[in-house]
Length: 137
Image (tube, rainbow, N blue to C red):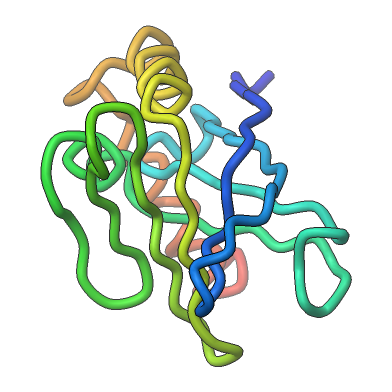
């Protein structure tokens, strides 16, 4: 059985006009993919009306809680003492979200309690990736 940690989170979507809109999300971590964290947005929070999941490195979230981190599609940085910004880039555009830092930190600590940094079973992740790549051969 795979360990899964889920935590509801409330964010604020920052529009181009600097209007803040409430957005719900679920933070997810699974020991099956121990180097990653997932942010799941429900259908009502997305442009296409489908659930959308963003996946990025757990280490990126850890670093982004302390200082600007990331390049490309996912960037994270502290915004004052109580907020953390998550910037997501996709072919559809850009989403700028502010999460309570305490919620992200609480989630991250729960993931490290489940699978400490440096003790991730990376070999199993590589094995599953190679199996998927080569069609289970």
